[in-house]
Length: 230
Image (cartoon, rainbow, N blue to C red):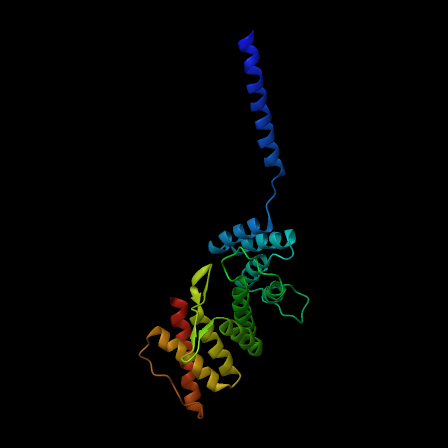
């Protein structure tokens, strides 16, 4: 009888523990961070429709979650849903702009702000808005400056696709400046790309003639193809 009474408290404690665990499971709900994290998993698997869905859920859960807008913008871009600020359609550009004004997460080691700037650079360039492309590209480059005389920059790379990096940004900037007929800036960014690649190709200096500009355009196209294959 005494032995039976001793077992009752242990049994009751076990039941209470199980009930507590079960209750905790029922109370759990995924946060904006959890949803964005899974969105990036889908993005890296190239399932952009699914990543778009999860990032949408992320920003619906927390309207200030910066990385949710970041992922949603990149997902839209991969789906070629670029939009612009002067349309009612929601796409990458409008989404990136929303993310740009959100506060930084101090616990996130990734510089989400830079990734949004890069996204805006590529999206605006794809839309043919070269002025905005160089505006946001310049903001990213200025943010990665780590030294002067000579100028040195942090080698930015997209954290969810390491093949996309500062060289892609530079060639995009060179192309946009070329379209704007700002040839000094075109030349500067082309030099960074060629030097970084260790290319034996000569940097074309002739921007004053039609033939020279045609050769620059060919060099831009050639370097873009090289970077796409890396």
